Image (cartoon, rainbow, N blue to C red; front, side, top):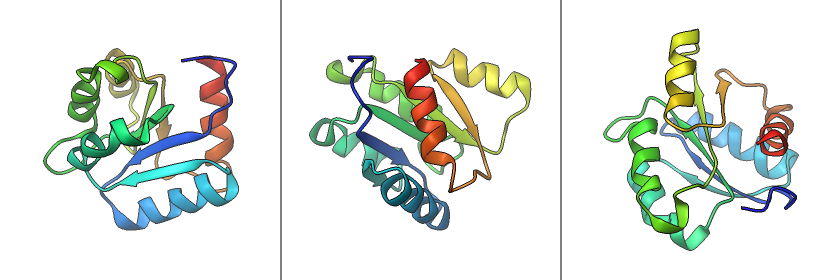
Length: 129
């Protein structure tokens, strides 16, 4: 990944339809990103190669395959071994955040997030990575 490259393609993996809809508006309309929103880790794995995101935002708690499991599966795909990832979760105790960062996430975005500043936060994480 080219660090100077502007962030354009973001994949969002979020099982809650309401949160996904708000994040879509925040990232596409407010942030101007090209977004691929997935309702599950499985859906993300099925479309990641075709969409080729520059950054993946993962909900931590999802039925079936949770965020950390999804990230581990993404890391097994040769073209996405180092695709930057961010976890989005309400579980933000310091030891929980430490475990997400240990999984290889760049950062953690706490839920609930502010839809008006979400895109800026994502850009900030991208620039500092």
